[in-house]
Image 1 (cartoon, rainbow, N blue to C red):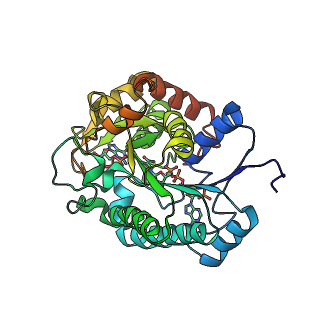
Image 2: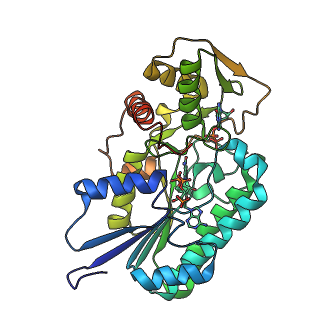
Image 3: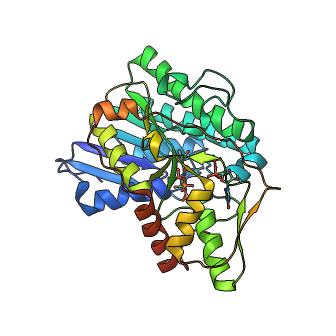
Length: 321
Ligand code: NAP
Ligand code: GDP
Protein backbone atom coordinates (compact mmCIF):
# COMPACT_ATOMS: atom_id res chain seq x y z
CA UNK A 1 0.00 0.00 0.00
CA UNK A 2 1.11 3.55 -0.67
CA UNK A 3 2.86 5.58 1.99
CA UNK A 4 1.91 9.22 2.69
CA UNK A 5 4.92 10.44 0.69
CA UNK A 6 3.72 8.67 -2.46
CA UNK A 7 2.61 11.26 -5.01
CA UNK A 8 2.22 9.06 -8.07
CA UNK A 9 0.75 5.57 -7.93
CA UNK A 10 1.37 4.06 -11.35
CA UNK A 11 -0.52 0.92 -12.31
CA UNK A 12 0.76 -1.03 -15.33
CA UNK A 13 -1.77 -3.46 -16.82
CA UNK A 14 -0.12 -6.23 -18.81
CA UNK A 15 2.91 -5.79 -16.56
CA UNK A 16 3.99 -9.41 -17.06
CA UNK A 17 4.30 -9.17 -20.86
CA UNK A 18 7.09 -8.14 -23.24
CA UNK A 19 6.57 -4.39 -22.88
CA UNK A 20 5.53 -4.48 -19.21
CA UNK A 21 8.62 -6.38 -18.14
CA UNK A 22 10.86 -3.99 -20.09
CA UNK A 23 9.32 -1.04 -18.22
CA UNK A 24 9.75 -2.95 -14.95
CA UNK A 25 13.44 -3.58 -15.71
CA UNK A 26 14.01 0.16 -16.13
CA UNK A 27 11.97 1.10 -13.06
CA UNK A 28 13.84 -1.41 -10.92
CA UNK A 29 17.13 -0.42 -12.56
CA UNK A 30 17.02 3.18 -11.35
CA UNK A 31 14.35 4.95 -13.45
CA UNK A 32 11.93 5.18 -10.52
CA UNK A 33 11.71 8.68 -9.07
CA UNK A 34 11.08 9.58 -5.44
CA UNK A 35 7.37 9.75 -4.75
CA UNK A 36 6.52 7.14 -7.40
CA UNK A 37 5.05 3.75 -6.58
CA UNK A 38 4.84 1.30 -9.49
CA UNK A 39 2.60 -1.80 -9.61
CA UNK A 40 2.89 -4.32 -12.45
CA UNK A 41 -0.21 -6.47 -12.98
CA UNK A 42 -0.64 -9.80 -14.72
CA UNK A 43 -3.88 -11.60 -15.55
CA UNK A 44 -3.41 -13.51 -12.27
CA UNK A 45 -4.07 -10.26 -10.35
CA UNK A 46 -7.27 -9.56 -12.29
CA UNK A 47 -8.93 -10.81 -15.45
CA UNK A 48 -9.52 -7.42 -17.05
CA UNK A 49 -12.23 -8.77 -19.33
CA UNK A 50 -14.26 -8.98 -16.10
CA UNK A 51 -15.58 -5.63 -14.88
CA UNK A 52 -15.82 -6.68 -11.20
CA UNK A 53 -12.23 -7.90 -11.11
CA UNK A 54 -11.09 -4.72 -12.87
CA UNK A 55 -12.99 -2.57 -10.36
CA UNK A 56 -11.46 -4.53 -7.44
CA UNK A 57 -7.91 -4.03 -8.68
CA UNK A 58 -8.45 -0.27 -9.15
CA UNK A 59 -9.97 -0.07 -5.69
CA UNK A 60 -7.04 -1.93 -4.21
CA UNK A 61 -4.22 0.10 -5.81
CA UNK A 62 -5.97 3.51 -6.21
CA UNK A 63 -3.74 4.51 -9.14
CA UNK A 64 -3.17 8.14 -10.05
CA UNK A 65 -1.64 7.06 -13.38
CA UNK A 66 -2.16 4.00 -15.60
CA UNK A 67 -0.04 2.49 -18.36
CA UNK A 68 -2.49 0.19 -20.10
CA UNK A 69 -0.73 -2.64 -21.94
CA UNK A 70 -2.94 -5.66 -21.23
CA UNK A 71 -4.35 -7.14 -24.40
CA UNK A 72 -4.79 -10.30 -26.39
CA UNK A 73 -1.66 -10.06 -28.54
CA UNK A 74 -0.21 -12.27 -31.26
CA UNK A 75 1.64 -12.45 -34.54
CA UNK A 76 0.14 -12.59 -38.03
CA UNK A 77 -0.88 -16.26 -37.87
CA UNK A 78 -2.66 -16.04 -34.50
CA UNK A 79 -4.48 -12.91 -35.68
CA UNK A 80 -5.67 -14.61 -38.88
CA UNK A 81 -7.19 -17.48 -36.84
CA UNK A 82 -8.92 -15.57 -34.05
CA UNK A 83 -10.23 -12.22 -35.35
CA UNK A 84 -13.42 -12.56 -33.28
CA UNK A 85 -11.55 -13.25 -30.01
CA UNK A 86 -9.10 -10.40 -30.67
CA UNK A 87 -12.04 -8.02 -31.15
CA UNK A 88 -14.16 -9.15 -28.19
CA UNK A 89 -11.48 -9.66 -25.51
CA UNK A 90 -9.68 -6.44 -26.32
CA UNK A 91 -12.90 -4.41 -26.46
CA UNK A 92 -13.89 -5.73 -23.01
CA UNK A 93 -10.42 -5.17 -21.50
CA UNK A 94 -10.14 -1.64 -22.89
CA UNK A 95 -13.64 -0.56 -21.88
CA UNK A 96 -13.20 -1.94 -18.36
CA UNK A 97 -9.79 -0.32 -17.83
CA UNK A 98 -10.73 3.09 -19.24
CA UNK A 99 -14.07 3.24 -17.41
CA UNK A 100 -12.51 2.22 -14.08
CA UNK A 101 -9.78 4.81 -14.63
CA UNK A 102 -12.54 7.38 -15.13
CA UNK A 103 -14.52 6.24 -12.07
CA UNK A 104 -11.37 6.36 -9.91
CA UNK A 105 -10.40 9.83 -11.19
CA UNK A 106 -7.08 8.66 -12.64
CA UNK A 107 -5.13 11.73 -13.76
CA UNK A 108 -3.53 10.15 -16.81
CA UNK A 109 -3.86 6.93 -18.81
CA UNK A 110 -1.47 5.93 -21.58
CA UNK A 111 -2.79 3.01 -23.63
CA UNK A 112 -1.03 1.10 -26.37
CA UNK A 113 -2.12 1.00 -30.02
CA UNK A 114 0.02 -0.45 -32.85
CA UNK A 115 1.05 0.59 -36.36
CA UNK A 116 -0.67 -2.54 -37.74
CA UNK A 117 -4.07 -0.93 -37.06
CA UNK A 118 -3.62 1.77 -39.73
CA UNK A 119 -5.46 1.58 -43.10
CA UNK A 120 -4.02 -1.02 -45.45
CA UNK A 121 -4.52 1.14 -48.55
CA UNK A 122 -2.67 4.31 -47.69
CA UNK A 123 0.16 6.63 -48.55
CA UNK A 124 3.52 6.34 -46.78
CA UNK A 125 4.82 7.22 -44.33
CA UNK A 126 1.85 6.71 -42.02
CA UNK A 127 1.32 9.41 -39.40
CA UNK A 128 -0.87 9.91 -36.33
CA UNK A 129 -3.64 11.66 -38.27
CA UNK A 130 -4.40 8.60 -40.43
CA UNK A 131 -5.66 5.96 -37.96
CA UNK A 132 -9.30 6.00 -39.04
CA UNK A 133 -8.87 6.73 -42.77
CA UNK A 134 -9.86 3.31 -44.13
CA UNK A 135 -10.11 -0.41 -43.36
CA UNK A 136 -7.09 -2.13 -41.76
CA UNK A 137 -5.37 -5.14 -43.36
CA UNK A 138 -7.82 -8.08 -43.48
CA UNK A 139 -5.47 -10.41 -41.58
CA UNK A 140 -5.96 -8.66 -38.22
CA UNK A 141 -9.14 -6.61 -38.52
CA UNK A 142 -10.46 -7.81 -35.11
CA UNK A 143 -7.39 -6.58 -33.22
CA UNK A 144 -7.12 -3.42 -35.32
CA UNK A 145 -10.67 -2.18 -34.89
CA UNK A 146 -10.59 -2.94 -31.14
CA UNK A 147 -7.37 -0.93 -30.80
CA UNK A 148 -8.73 1.93 -32.93
CA UNK A 149 -11.67 2.22 -30.52
CA UNK A 150 -9.26 3.14 -27.70
CA UNK A 151 -8.51 6.33 -29.61
CA UNK A 152 -12.24 7.02 -30.04
CA UNK A 153 -12.87 6.37 -26.34
CA UNK A 154 -9.94 8.59 -25.25
CA UNK A 155 -11.34 11.49 -27.28
CA UNK A 156 -14.82 10.94 -25.89
CA UNK A 157 -13.63 10.85 -22.25
CA UNK A 158 -11.74 14.06 -22.91
CA UNK A 159 -14.71 15.76 -24.56
CA UNK A 160 -17.27 14.73 -21.96
CA UNK A 161 -15.15 14.72 -18.78
CA UNK A 162 -11.89 16.49 -19.59
CA UNK A 163 -9.94 13.26 -18.92
CA UNK A 164 -6.28 13.01 -19.93
CA UNK A 165 -6.41 9.58 -21.57
CA UNK A 166 -4.02 9.16 -24.49
CA UNK A 167 -2.16 6.42 -26.38
CA UNK A 168 1.13 5.54 -27.99
CA UNK A 169 1.51 3.71 -31.31
CA UNK A 170 4.57 1.44 -31.38
CA UNK A 171 5.79 -0.47 -34.42
CA UNK A 172 6.70 -4.20 -34.07
CA UNK A 173 8.29 -4.69 -30.63
CA UNK A 174 10.83 -7.36 -29.67
CA UNK A 175 13.20 -8.17 -26.82
CA UNK A 176 13.67 -10.22 -23.66
CA UNK A 177 10.52 -11.76 -22.10
CA UNK A 178 8.76 -11.89 -25.49
CA UNK A 179 6.34 -14.67 -26.37
CA UNK A 180 8.61 -17.11 -28.27
CA UNK A 181 5.74 -19.46 -29.18
CA UNK A 182 6.27 -20.29 -32.85
CA UNK A 183 2.63 -20.62 -33.92
CA UNK A 184 1.23 -17.69 -31.92
CA UNK A 185 4.00 -15.13 -31.55
CA UNK A 186 5.48 -12.39 -33.69
CA UNK A 187 8.08 -12.86 -36.37
CA UNK A 188 11.32 -12.12 -34.46
CA UNK A 189 10.69 -14.29 -31.37
CA UNK A 190 9.33 -17.00 -33.72
CA UNK A 191 12.46 -16.92 -35.88
CA UNK A 192 14.77 -16.83 -32.84
CA UNK A 193 13.08 -19.94 -31.43
CA UNK A 194 13.10 -21.68 -34.83
CA UNK A 195 16.78 -20.87 -35.35
CA UNK A 196 17.59 -22.24 -31.88
CA UNK A 197 15.82 -25.52 -32.73
CA UNK A 198 17.31 -25.73 -36.24
CA UNK A 199 20.81 -25.29 -34.81
CA UNK A 200 20.19 -27.91 -32.12
CA UNK A 201 18.63 -30.45 -34.50
CA UNK A 202 20.80 -29.80 -37.58
CA UNK A 203 17.71 -28.94 -39.67
CA UNK A 204 17.02 -25.98 -42.02
CA UNK A 205 15.55 -22.72 -40.71
CA UNK A 206 12.15 -22.21 -42.32
CA UNK A 207 11.13 -18.55 -42.67
CA UNK A 208 7.42 -18.18 -43.40
CA UNK A 209 6.37 -16.23 -46.49
CA UNK A 210 8.62 -14.66 -49.12
CA UNK A 211 10.82 -12.65 -46.74
CA UNK A 212 9.98 -9.51 -48.74
CA UNK A 213 7.59 -7.68 -46.37
CA UNK A 214 9.19 -4.79 -44.50
CA UNK A 215 8.94 -3.80 -40.84
CA UNK A 216 10.27 -1.16 -38.44
CA UNK A 217 11.27 -3.01 -35.27
CA UNK A 218 11.63 -1.29 -31.91
CA UNK A 219 13.61 -2.85 -29.04
CA UNK A 220 11.44 -3.29 -25.93
CA UNK A 221 13.93 -1.40 -23.70
CA UNK A 222 13.88 1.60 -26.07
CA UNK A 223 10.08 1.50 -26.11
CA UNK A 224 10.06 1.29 -22.31
CA UNK A 225 12.21 4.43 -22.02
CA UNK A 226 9.83 6.24 -24.39
CA UNK A 227 6.76 4.98 -22.49
CA UNK A 228 8.10 6.43 -19.23
CA UNK A 229 8.78 9.74 -20.99
CA UNK A 230 5.21 9.78 -22.39
CA UNK A 231 3.75 9.08 -18.96
CA UNK A 232 5.69 11.93 -17.39
CA UNK A 233 5.85 14.55 -20.13
CA UNK A 234 3.39 14.02 -22.98
CA UNK A 235 0.21 16.05 -22.51
CA UNK A 236 -1.69 15.57 -25.80
CA UNK A 237 -4.81 13.43 -26.19
CA UNK A 238 -3.75 12.71 -29.79
CA UNK A 239 -1.62 9.56 -29.88
CA UNK A 240 2.07 9.54 -30.77
CA UNK A 241 3.93 7.01 -32.93
CA UNK A 242 6.94 5.46 -31.15
CA UNK A 243 9.22 4.16 -33.87
CA UNK A 244 12.69 4.09 -35.29
CA UNK A 245 13.13 6.18 -38.45
CA UNK A 246 11.83 5.13 -41.85
CA UNK A 247 15.40 4.46 -42.97
CA UNK A 248 15.67 1.74 -40.29
CA UNK A 249 12.95 -0.40 -41.90
CA UNK A 250 14.21 -3.90 -42.77
CA UNK A 251 12.83 -6.81 -44.80
CA UNK A 252 11.88 -10.06 -43.02
CA UNK A 253 14.79 -11.65 -44.93
CA UNK A 254 17.25 -9.09 -43.49
CA UNK A 255 15.80 -9.61 -40.01
CA UNK A 256 16.24 -13.40 -40.40
CA UNK A 257 19.87 -12.85 -41.49
CA UNK A 258 20.52 -10.77 -38.37
CA UNK A 259 19.16 -13.61 -36.18
CA UNK A 260 21.14 -16.26 -38.10
CA UNK A 261 24.32 -14.27 -37.50
CA UNK A 262 23.56 -13.57 -33.81
CA UNK A 263 22.83 -17.27 -33.16
CA UNK A 264 25.83 -18.50 -35.17
CA UNK A 265 23.53 -20.70 -37.30
CA UNK A 266 25.33 -22.20 -40.29
CA UNK A 267 22.57 -24.37 -41.79
CA UNK A 268 20.24 -23.80 -44.73
CA UNK A 269 17.60 -21.03 -44.71
CA UNK A 270 14.37 -21.81 -46.61
CA UNK A 271 11.46 -19.45 -47.43
CA UNK A 272 8.06 -21.20 -47.29
CA UNK A 273 6.01 -19.16 -49.75
CA UNK A 274 2.91 -21.27 -49.07
CA UNK A 275 2.60 -19.22 -45.83
CA UNK A 276 1.07 -15.75 -45.78
CA UNK A 277 3.19 -12.59 -46.10
CA UNK A 278 0.52 -10.54 -44.33
CA UNK A 279 0.70 -6.78 -44.75
CA UNK A 280 3.55 -5.82 -47.08
CA UNK A 281 4.58 -2.78 -45.08
CA UNK A 282 3.28 -0.18 -42.62
CA UNK A 283 6.09 2.35 -42.78
CA UNK A 284 5.50 4.92 -40.06
CA UNK A 285 6.89 8.41 -39.55
CA UNK A 286 8.52 9.20 -36.22
CA UNK A 287 8.49 12.91 -37.11
CA UNK A 288 6.25 13.86 -34.19
CA UNK A 289 8.44 11.94 -31.72
CA UNK A 290 11.55 13.56 -33.18
CA UNK A 291 10.04 17.03 -32.65
CA UNK A 292 9.75 16.23 -28.93
CA UNK A 293 12.94 14.17 -28.57
CA UNK A 294 15.35 15.04 -31.39
CA UNK A 295 18.30 13.33 -29.69
CA UNK A 296 16.73 10.06 -28.53
CA UNK A 297 19.15 7.21 -29.33
CA UNK A 298 17.67 3.89 -30.43
CA UNK A 299 19.66 0.71 -29.82
CA UNK A 300 21.12 -0.46 -33.18
CA UNK A 301 18.98 -3.31 -34.58
CA UNK A 302 21.76 -5.93 -34.77
CA UNK A 303 22.85 -5.18 -31.19
CA UNK A 304 19.29 -5.49 -29.89
CA UNK A 305 18.81 -8.75 -31.81
CA UNK A 306 22.05 -10.11 -30.33
CA UNK A 307 20.98 -9.18 -26.78
CA UNK A 308 17.57 -10.83 -27.34
CA UNK A 309 19.07 -14.02 -28.82
CA UNK A 310 21.59 -14.26 -25.96
CA UNK A 311 18.77 -13.80 -23.43
CA UNK A 312 16.67 -16.50 -25.12
CA UNK A 313 19.54 -19.01 -25.14
CA UNK A 314 20.39 -18.27 -21.49
CA UNK A 315 16.72 -18.45 -20.43
CA UNK A 316 15.53 -21.23 -22.74
CA UNK A 317 13.94 -23.24 -19.93
CA UNK A 318 11.89 -20.37 -18.51
CA UNK A 319 11.13 -18.30 -21.65
CA UNK A 320 7.48 -18.14 -22.75
CA UNK A 321 7.19 -20.57 -25.64
P1 NAP B 1 2.33 -9.79 -24.25
O1 NAP B 1 3.77 -10.05 -24.03
O2 NAP B 1 1.51 -10.83 -24.96
O3 NAP B 1 1.66 -9.47 -22.83
C1 NAP B 1 0.29 -9.29 -22.73
C2 NAP B 1 -0.01 -8.87 -21.33
O4 NAP B 1 -1.43 -8.67 -21.20
C3 NAP B 1 0.39 -9.90 -20.27
O5 NAP B 1 0.85 -9.22 -19.13
C4 NAP B 1 -0.92 -10.60 -19.99
O6 NAP B 1 -0.99 -11.17 -18.69
C5 NAP B 1 -1.89 -9.43 -20.10
N1 NAP B 1 -3.25 -9.89 -20.35
C6 NAP B 1 -3.74 -10.54 -21.42
N2 NAP B 1 -5.05 -10.83 -21.26
C7 NAP B 1 -5.41 -10.31 -20.06
C8 NAP B 1 -6.60 -10.29 -19.31
N3 NAP B 1 -7.74 -10.83 -19.78
N4 NAP B 1 -6.60 -9.70 -18.09
C9 NAP B 1 -5.47 -9.14 -17.59
N5 NAP B 1 -4.31 -9.12 -18.25
C10 NAP B 1 -4.27 -9.71 -19.47
O7 NAP B 1 2.09 -8.44 -25.06
P2 NAP B 1 3.10 -7.24 -25.36
O8 NAP B 1 3.79 -7.58 -26.63
O9 NAP B 1 3.86 -6.88 -24.15
O10 NAP B 1 2.07 -6.09 -25.71
C11 NAP B 1 1.79 -5.03 -24.80
C12 NAP B 1 0.96 -3.99 -25.51
O11 NAP B 1 1.68 -3.51 -26.64
C13 NAP B 1 -0.36 -4.55 -26.05
O12 NAP B 1 -1.39 -3.61 -25.83
C14 NAP B 1 -0.09 -4.72 -27.55
O13 NAP B 1 -1.27 -4.61 -28.29
C15 NAP B 1 0.87 -3.59 -27.80
N6 NAP B 1 1.76 -3.75 -28.96
C16 NAP B 1 2.58 -4.85 -29.03
C17 NAP B 1 3.42 -4.98 -30.14
C18 NAP B 1 4.34 -6.16 -30.30
O14 NAP B 1 5.00 -6.27 -31.35
N7 NAP B 1 4.47 -7.05 -29.32
C19 NAP B 1 3.43 -3.99 -31.15
C20 NAP B 1 2.60 -2.87 -31.01
C21 NAP B 1 1.77 -2.76 -29.91
P3 NAP B 1 -0.43 -12.67 -18.40
O15 NAP B 1 1.07 -12.57 -18.43
O16 NAP B 1 -0.94 -13.01 -17.07
O17 NAP B 1 -0.96 -13.52 -19.51
P1 GDP C 1 2.79 -8.37 -38.35
O1 GDP C 1 3.99 -7.50 -38.37
O2 GDP C 1 1.65 -7.78 -37.58
O3 GDP C 1 2.37 -8.82 -39.72
O4 GDP C 1 3.11 -9.71 -37.53
P2 GDP C 1 4.36 -10.66 -37.36
O5 GDP C 1 5.30 -10.11 -36.35
O6 GDP C 1 3.77 -12.00 -37.11
O7 GDP C 1 5.17 -10.66 -38.75
C1 GDP C 1 4.61 -11.29 -39.88
C2 GDP C 1 5.58 -11.27 -41.05
O8 GDP C 1 6.73 -12.10 -40.78
C3 GDP C 1 4.91 -11.89 -42.28
O9 GDP C 1 5.47 -11.34 -43.45
C4 GDP C 1 5.30 -13.36 -42.13
O10 GDP C 1 5.23 -14.05 -43.38
C5 GDP C 1 6.75 -13.23 -41.68
N1 GDP C 1 7.28 -14.39 -40.94
C6 GDP C 1 8.35 -15.17 -41.32
N2 GDP C 1 8.58 -16.14 -40.45
C7 GDP C 1 7.67 -15.99 -39.45
C8 GDP C 1 7.45 -16.68 -38.21
O11 GDP C 1 8.12 -17.66 -37.86
N3 GDP C 1 6.44 -16.20 -37.41
C9 GDP C 1 5.68 -15.13 -37.76
N4 GDP C 1 4.73 -14.70 -36.92
N5 GDP C 1 5.85 -14.46 -38.93
C10 GDP C 1 6.85 -14.87 -39.75
